[in-house]
Image (cartoon, rainbow over all chains, first blue to last red; front, side):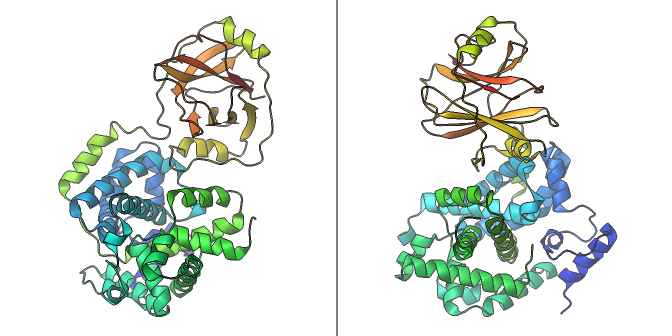
Length: 215
Length: 234
C-alpha cells in the first residue's frame, strides 16, 4: 500500500539521487523540506557543530521525550533523561556507525537504554508490576495525534502488532514499552526464563517481518 | 561466528527490546564485533525497535531544556573524556633508559573488546581505520595494555585492563616516546579490573612508543619514575 511515509522516502531518495533503501527509518522523522538526513547531522555533530546539534535536537527531542515518558511516566525525570540522551549523542556522535544501523535507531536506542536504566535503578519490578499489562496493549496505540506521519507509523505498528500472538505481543510490550528485563518478565508472568526469551524473540521476528525491516 | 544462530536471534531481539541487563548488553556488543551474523541480527532488530519507538506520541520538551542542554555542552567534551596532561616536549633520559630495561611482551591481538559506554568514539574511529594496528603488553604488577594506532589518522589509543587502583594522590600517565623523548600525555585512573580506554592527545608519529608511568595526582611534565610498561608501535 502507498503510505505517506513511503512516498516521503521515495521523494527524498529521488532528490538525493539514490534508490530508496530497504530501511526507511532515516527518512521517517524528516520534515519533507529538509535536505539533511539525521545521518548527515550526526556526522556534523561529531565534529563539534553546534548548529547541527541544535537542528538534531529540534527534530528529535519530542520523539526522544515521547519514548522516555512512555517508559518513565514522570515528566520531570523524563526531561532529565532526555538531557542525558542528547549529551550522550553530543559526546558519542563520532562512534555512530551507519553500518550498524540508521541514525534514528541509534538515537532511540540510547533513549530507550537510558530510560530503562533509570527505571531499573529507581523502581523495583514488583512496584511496576503489570503497570503495563496485556490489557494495556490494545490501548497502547490508541493515542490520538494530529501528526499524519506519526499516525501512519502508529497504524503501521498497530497492524504489525496484531499479527503477533497475544503472548508474543505481551512480551514485546512489557520489554519495550514497560522496560522489563527477561528475568523480571519471567517473574511477573510466572513462566520459565527460556520461555520468555523465545517468546520475545519470536515476537520481534514477527514484527520485523511484518514491518518489512531490512538492513 | 560464535554460537548457533538461534542464540544470536534471542540475544539480538532481547538487546533491541531492552530486555538485557547492562552486563548482558555489553557482552552482546562485544560479541557482535566478532560475529557478522549477530551484528546483522542486531541491526535488523534495532530498526524494528526504532519503529516501535517512533509509534509513540511525541512529547515536546520544555523550552528551558534546550538552553540547559546547550549550557551543558561547554562541560561536555566530545570523544574521550580524560583529563588532559601538559603537552610539552621535554628531553629526559629516564623513560628511554628504563624502556629498554622493561620487558615488553608484544602480542598480536585477535579481537579487541571495547567498553561500550565509556567514551569510545575516538577509540572506535582509530580501531575502525583501515590501517589500524595494535600491540599488547603485560604489566608486570598485573594488567594488560593494548595500544591501537592508525598512521593515517596519526592517532593512538590505549585500552587498559586490570591495572591496580592507585591511591588518590597518584595517577597513571601516558607518554608518547619519540626518538627517546617522552612527551607527556593524558593521565587516567583505573579501578581494579576495569577496562579503560584513553585516546592520546597529539599526533602520533610512526615509531613512537607508548609508555605508562605512575605520577603524582595531576600528572607531570617529566616522568618521575620508570614506566610500568612500554608498548612499541612499530
